[in-house]
Length: 119
Picture 1 (cartoon, rainbow, N blue to C red):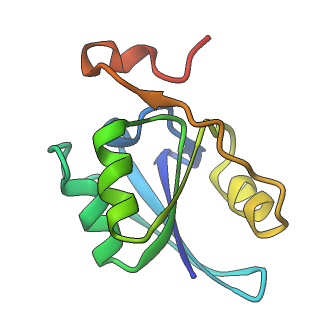
Picture 2: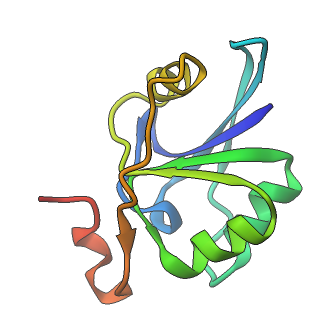
């Protein structure tokens, strides 16, 4: 299964569409087989969810995400886990162990994008 994580360097980023890159993990039988990093091709409504689904992602992990992106991802039968922070590889490992849960941290207003996921 391919898992895409919105990242800045190797850290899960707070807002899906504004990350610098996506770390894409190829996993099988609870183990990470390979990891590739692809630059964020640009933040346009509906584009990134389809871009990642077309790359084969079956799960997307991010700090926060807009409701429109969540809808597009769900339409593509891709799972979403949001409200995550910390190291991207650690987040994927926690998911593979059944320990990573979504907090449902949906960003509703793009003018507040810099505040998403912050307390």
